[in-house]
Image (cartoon, rainbow, N blue to C red; front, side, top):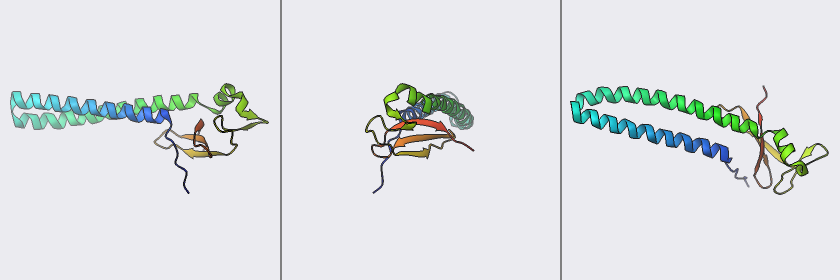
Length: 136
């Protein structure tokens, strides 16, 4: 029986920010393209459409890198030392256990997506406890 992992709230927030930015770029693209089509005709709209699509792609890449840096910064703030300092009752004899269910079994998985961060989660309840950087 496979365990379903919860997506951390920080990751959900990053994904929602990307979706919101993408929707805004698409909306601006269509409004500008229809305006150009109305004013100058279909041919001008095609040329401007390709130009706007190129700039929208560039803006998406820039925005995604900003969101990724913000996401990585948030992940760094929820580190092992943060967990030990904020939840001292969840650490005994140098061993960490889950603050929700008390289980000592902790799974580690890579988050990928260019974050180079590992998520440490409780095996029993699936809650994410803290994050750590990937080691080379």
